Length: 297
Image 1 (cartoon, rainbow, N blue to C red):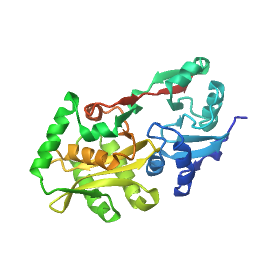
Image 2 (image 1 turned 90 degrees about the vertical axis):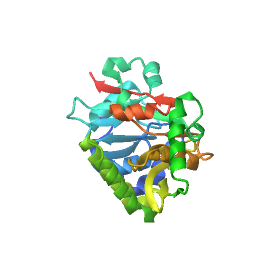
Image 3 (image 1 turned 180 degrees about the horizontal axis):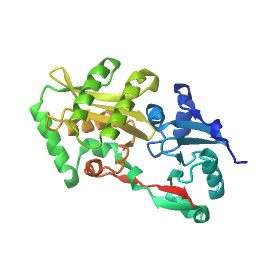
Image 4 (image 1 turned 90 degrees about the horizontal axis):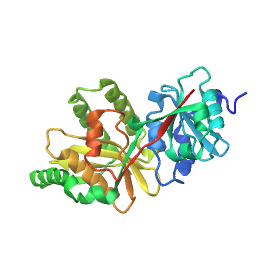
């Protein structure tokens, strides 16, 4: 008999928000999987379910056959093996993801039951809020120049918080942006569904964002939520690709809106896409949060 039963996991619901946010807010920095907004808006796509167990929260993806590293209570490697086998009893290729390096270092018996691998596709890119606003230094000079071009070219632009009445126009911009991208159609289709979930549940999720208007038209927007008192997670940023500097402008305006409200901005992961990786590295992250995956031997 395992420690848990697969049927003890339940789908993520809006009513779980207060409890899960309270758990996540106890930590300064966590991977972006540990934020309620992401769990909810991706829940149908990845079959995300969760449960409470021994003062810990267990979260799994039925699509990927992955169990997130439990958060709260600390489990031995042998207990983690039991949890993984109990969660996916018929899947020998199942894995535990987002395992911190210090856990592996402090628990040498991990090697007795698991193969560990650095999972750089799912590393989180962390930036100082102040840095993304000030854009100081040679590494960010190009970003600052593109931002300046946008400001000079659109002197009457305005930026305002994302509101419910903006969502339809933001989704139209998302579609325009999506249709201009030729690679990774499956990933983009999944993201479209996640954005729809975020917008449909906009008020209940308590997400925030910023909208840039040029001549009354939304040309860029962002969607973010707080993971802790120290960090916000940017879930989406879309912009009109025909408007030079719009990408840099929404990044800057998002940082501006978060200045003084949180120390860090988590711009999520590159999921192994070279273009996305290049874009995230171009902003000179303060920290890339690498973690490991553990697969059964």
